[in-house]
Length: 382
Image 1 (cartoon, rainbow, N blue to C red):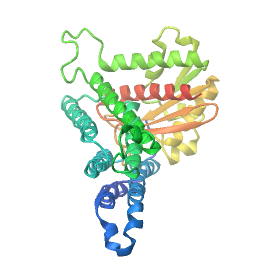
Image 2: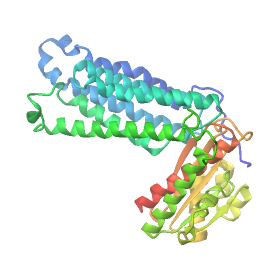
Image 3: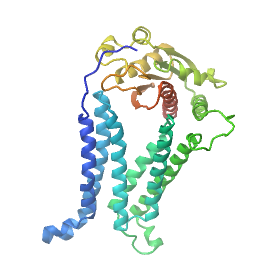
Image 4: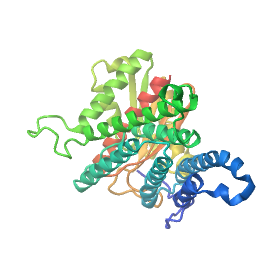
């Protein structure tokens, strides 16, 4: 797949990576704001500052959390996705969450078992990832993990600003709205924490020795794609919407997965495999300026591919994928595994950047799975 070379990115010191490092360096600031007796340093204002202490700590936590979105946006918009960033960004999130949870235990605001559940999940998943990487296997993450992170962050903010200790007995505590809301959100976070871990372990069952010892079962990837495809067809049929695809690196894999489901003709109108730039331009209507200025693997191209497929096939919803499956084709800022996905609906068109690991087949399989998940989300919101 040909494309113009993007801006050179020979250093790890990109704006997005700098923000990630700053996020890590700000974690001790949040801990100090929450735990240190700094109001006492201001003499007569101790009582008033103590009232604001938890609020200030929560604001700092929210500010640090928001930089996660900012560095991701900069990396995508500037085509500066780096291996260093892919390593440090999730690490920064884990450091922030772990520091916040341990601080809340120190304050007596959160019981230890909650923290143990959350941290145990992270250790287990990290161990499985290491085993998978040693065998050259890449396990695609699910939306459960993203929802888990969001609810954990919200719960931490709520527990930071609520009273450190439960006042009175349990019946009295139930009259405290903030206490009740804090625990409801935390329980949802814990459920998602366990569910996302189980989902990951199911996908990795062959890696950890829990798969079919006779090798008669389908592969985890095949089962996952088949299940997702079935959901796409069933959900689209229930909603009464039609679908289309525009594919580059997957070469028709998304459409093939959908049409493998009986009855898919009720909802799937067709797909356009626009592997070459000429096909993207002449068939899907991707602008020549987009290909010249941003390249085929770009947010702009993915958006125009999705819009083109939806218009050409007169579908309600269309998904597009364009990326670098490898082993060659990588350029500065766009390593192998860089994939842009576009989803066009009657009301909106959005694009998402993925950075997949593994060989060519791994990247293609993960792209198909992610595109099917993107279709499901768009159909459910229609």
